[in-house]
Length: 236
Image (cartoon, rainbow, N blue to C red; front, top):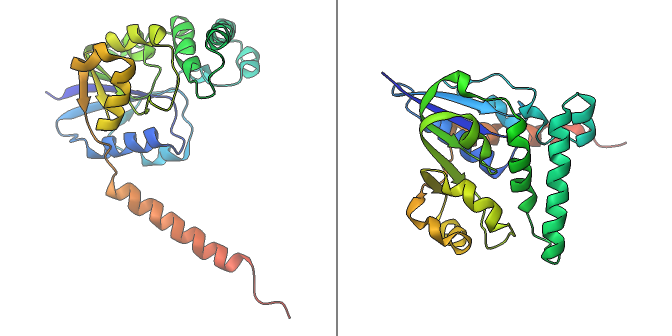
């Protein structure tokens, strides 16, 4: 029997974490693993690169509201999620004020994760997985909404360049069985903020799929060719 894996991701816009996920998905041996991919909002040009072997779970309207403008969330009738987003924004402002408004702060993401996740529907209807992966912070959803024997969270951020609230983030990271870091430098910066999590760290470099690189190169060549003709001939 195949092992069941659950992976969560916010969306599939063109970004480092999203490209990393495509590489991982294209490297999986699907004769051994069944992979369910849960994307909060089915948007982004990288959606087309998801392997056909992956079971892309249906978009859940509530989850798609996590990062949309609050006005749109209210218009769509998700009042609890909108309220939670507003509360998270207030808590973030209080934190920033106490810490002299650091320019590089990403603390808001964890405040949003903590406030919004209780308002989201459970994903346990999909059954119990052998492994659940939260691929991008905040990692509350996999922790609270998914049933799995083992849970791991991914780090893509160099914490030496960003500001976070360790007291708010630590309980979430601590609850995972393992934390996957993409490089020694990322591990070092992360442990500089969360030294107690050293034993949970596992390093796993990003996988860049040859198929993805080839396709993107072909698209770029096509754009170059088009741009060469788009200017028209020489003016007489």
